[in-house]
Structure formats: structure tokens, C-alpha cells
Amino acid sequence: MTEPTETEEIRLRRAFALIGEEAGRPDPTAAPTDPPAAIRTLTTATRPPRKQRRTRAALAAAAAACVTAIVVTVTVTADDGSGKNADTTGRGQTFPEALACATAVVEGDLTAVRPAGQGRVHVTVSVDQWFKPSTGPATARFDLADPAVADPAEAYTTGDHLLLLVPRRKGQIPDTSQGQELRPMRDRITRTLPEAAHTPCPPEFQ
Image (tube, rainbow, N blue to C red; front, side, top):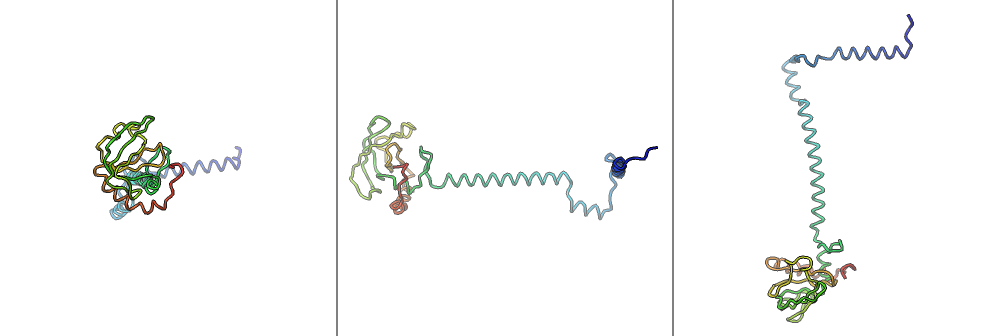
């Protein structure tokens, strides 16, 4: 009989070791033997079942995902609510910049609205209050980009009472407030005008 080589002997030892491990394991089909009550209590109290551990792990992973989603949502919400107004250039204006870029800020009644062609409209305002400049004539006329081009529901109508921010850039639609928006907008303008006086108008809004 030929003696096994060293490599074969190592392989045999490994095989026997595996067989011994398998023989020592309990039969999965056999009913488990109940441990003593003290051990049973300790095990139950300190080590949750595998299914429960897996459930907790899954919940932890889901919770981590939810936290990540919340952080992203809060970040996005903070950016959108930062006081910037969307513009067609894709860049936003801060409110001080909007006031700095306005050639006039007035509140009053529209007494005349006349289409001027090429997406523009002439409006006449019976002014109740001038914000910028601080004083002006009782009646003012403005050549404006017509908001009805983008949204017919936003068309100016004779008799409308508006607070109007007339932008410096010719193609930009004015910001307007009316109804319940008027009082908070007046307060906001009054608070922000001192800052706007020292705020440069960005080149893309000139």
C-alpha cells in the first residue's frame, strides 16, 4: 500500500475535521431540548430571535434612509425658501436685489391698460403711495412686459389695485401684490428699502 503524500494527508485531515463538525451539529429536524429555566430566561432576555434581529436591522436601515431623505428634503426646502425669486435666467434675486433693480415701486389703481405690441403693455396708475422713489406724481405711466403673455390669468385690468415693482430690465415681468398680500408686502418693502439702498443690482437684471 502506497503511503499518502503530504498534500493528500492534509486534505484527508480537513475532510475528517469537516465530517466531525457535521456529526457534532444537532439534527435540524429534531425537536430542541429545553434548557434549564434560568438559562432559558437569560437567553430570551438578552438575545432576541433571529427573525426579530433581522427585523430590527431592516428597520434601522430604513430609519437611516429616512433620515437621509429628510436631510435632503430640508436642504432643498431651505434653498427654495431662501427669499429668492425665480427668474427666466435661472438665477434668483434676493428681495433687496429686487428692490435695488426696481426703477419704481408704487401702490395704486390702474386707470388705463393699453396693449403696446411685442409682448408689452402700457399702464396708467393713480398712485396712492410711492415707495421708490419716496415721492412722485399722483399719476404715473409705465411701459411694462405684459404678464398675460406667460399667463392670461395675470393680465392687467383697469380698476385693479396693485402694489407694483417695476423692474429695470425691460423684458422682466413686474412683481405685483394685491388683496391680502398688500399689507405684508408693504411692511416687507419698508423694512428692506434701507438695505436695498446699499445693494447693487446684479448685471443680469439691469
